[in-house]
Length: 205
Image (cartoon, rainbow, N blue to C red):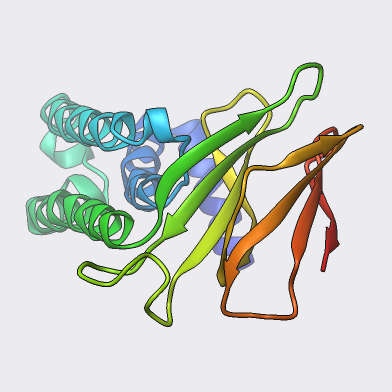
């Protein structure tokens, strides 16, 4: 298997048709993966638009590259019985995963606050999963909060922690932001502290 992939990579760099085939095939998992990347709240609407533009570009280039290749020189992907089914699956799969991701985002956590303190590099985003009306936000048994941290200057976040609770506004002491717990399904927790210089949980009590 390893030798197969090495040979495939060699062919991609020696034959432009194999390189184009590799680009198109690798675009499918790339686009699906992009739909599950956590973005900062202001970029949440940009993500699906960017994915759909990327999808259209891949389809356009696939047809263009196929039309520029002589029939007797086409690699496996550009042959009719493979090209059109693959492109159909490709075109349906990406919007499907995108819609699934948007549905999960709509029913799951919602951004409620952003915290960034002067002279400290970490930006935190608070996402809450509240109870559905007519219940209050804490009357169900599934309410929870995620604290996400921005990755450097990228519009991407990673989940720092999940808690079956809601937080109050943080109190900053030095580099440490302490989030008192407003309500919790886990009574053993009183507060969560995060180092705003290094973006790490330093105390979870």
